[in-house]
Amino acid sequence: MSWTWPDNQVKPITKYKGQCLRRQQQQICPYWMAKHSKDTKKVIGFRCSLFDIDKSGANSLPICDSTYGKSYEGKP
Image (tube, rainbow, N blue to C red):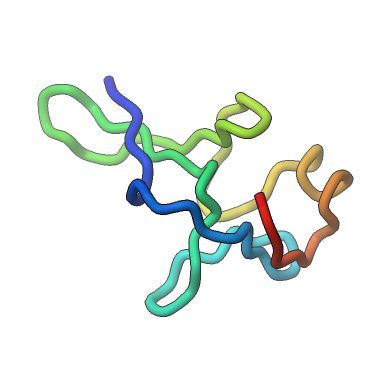
């Protein structure tokens, strides 16, 4: 299993109503990493490297919401 980042560019953290945005033309939080299986390279989970906690889907972590708010766009 391996972790990958969306890219190597630092982008603002962007979330709206507790969702880490990921659709086309929306910036992705640079701390959101995808977990891939070694054999098939299929995405099997996600991790927030800022808080070092596994997460599921696009939902933000409660600790992230309490630190940054449920909707946030700004510097990481």
